[in-house]
Length: 190
Image (cartoon, rainbow, N blue to C red; front, top):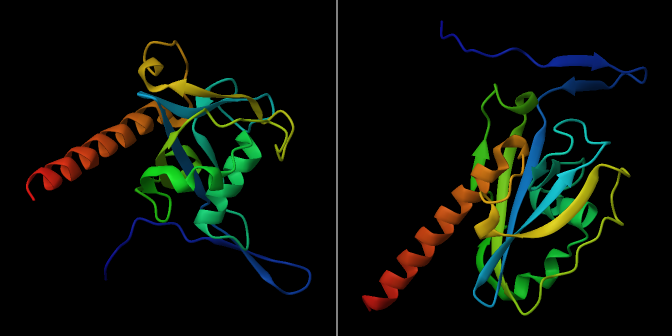
């Protein structure tokens, strides 16, 4: 008999007879980069006093998939709630679009509370940095501040990063640079 390294999900019987399954959560992570003139900026926020964990650390926009929504809807909702960014304003100006399906899925059970994280991202060219706001926060104090951080400052500024999000940004940048170089090489070979 084949053996697997899993633990069965717990079932909770509710008073109305329905069963609620306790299982791993799905998190979304959004790497949003904008290009203004020749400089790139990444959207980051500082976790506030009401965050579940990693308080005071910087991170990419992230959150959980809610009932009755798709992953794409969760990305747009979390961006709106935590940063005030309406993703629709960037969509017409996308250079790189990794929003329709995850560019990375992380399911290591030793990771943050065994969350399965789905990573999305984009790069858009803008003529001004989009405005940001904390007015839509679902939980007041969950996010302390939100900024457009110049990509060149990721390592220069002494920021503590939650969930290794500085490494995620770098992974996305490498993917972006590789994709851009590949497209340029294909164009030159025509």
